[in-house]
Length: 100
Image (cartoon, rainbow, N blue to C red):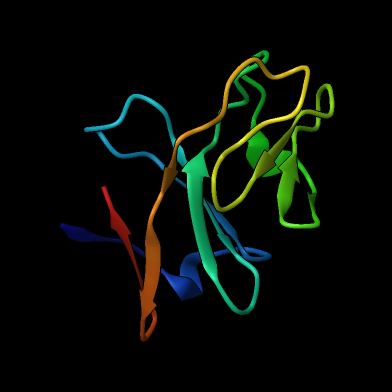
């Protein structure tokens, strides 16, 4: 079920952290200018805030210790022990929808 979570106009520099009561972890929304991505905003290595990291080559880099997470799959590199959850996302006009 597709759920509206934000407006594209709410993103700052292509990013927005959404806190949804039905999910324990906040969700990071990223807009690359072409595509919207949604993934958990917490690094699985030490709970670092992924929204503060850089996006490089389709991955977000945790600002604390450099673990990388694929924007499409959530797959990780060390030192993160496990992937982050990703959510299917789409854009309808100015509305960002997630399949939660």
